[in-house]
Length: 404
Image (cartoon, rainbow, N blue to C red; front, side, top):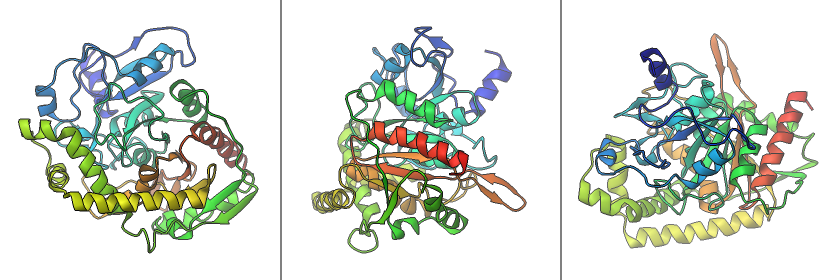
């Protein structure tokens, strides 16, 4: 690979290590589809960095390829390369101090969002057609929103995580990006269980308080979505997820439960290796290792109550409209410490309930004297409704483009 190509690939979110232009089968449901893979998925014969030099130093080459990668390769896709990740995927910023930042290809000078920023950058810059990533606390949904891509966080547990360097297994999911809804669905047909029914929901659920979490121009734009979706959904109903009062601490509930899961999964390696991380991730890991059983028990009680309440509000096949992120992409290097809790309040809903959530990039914001900023919205459905959600995403996209 020449130096120019190597530089262009690095700006598109790719890592320097790993295979590229690798295809197992010329035929299949995804024949010729270019695949970018987050540097957390094992590929036999190669070593992942997990975004951290000390991880690379203390681990050897994989002996087996991750299940999700293998299935996509068996379907004919072309492995384009590993892509950048935040350290251990424990961030939503998309800024790796060891291996670099991935600049937003749709909004230069701005962040991709993390932690699956490399896969988002690769698809957004058209170096790949599909970006494979992970989503624990928003790592598919946030970059999809910031980069103007379709992105799915599937129901927890429906896509195999075998061969994945996880973060917090009770919340980890294997997700993916695509530039259009049809390809997003086609990938789902390869990775998702085939025996799940596909429904035709006709009611859109809206929580006014949840919608108000979109800030400024984003909130104004989001309020127009309901009318635009009237051609797909026969009716709209108001729900109350309790985020204003009963479950106002949702961000903390997720933070605590995720932290305990991280401590269980990575604690031995962290204590034995004493690895070096960036300051924000070091602080989060210290918090995770210091959590008390009482804090975890209280958070788990809240999670169970919230899950039951959401089930009561949405039923088995309800569709919830919500903002994916409170705002458009922040500038590279911008302090996002105050944004993170707001982000987690939105992204924690599917994490704490195991639900499927898809981001649709159908609402770019035109700003005077500024380029159009990618934005959009999410649709969320209860666990197991992944195929229905992907079909619904296509229907919504078609109706939106027709102006129905």
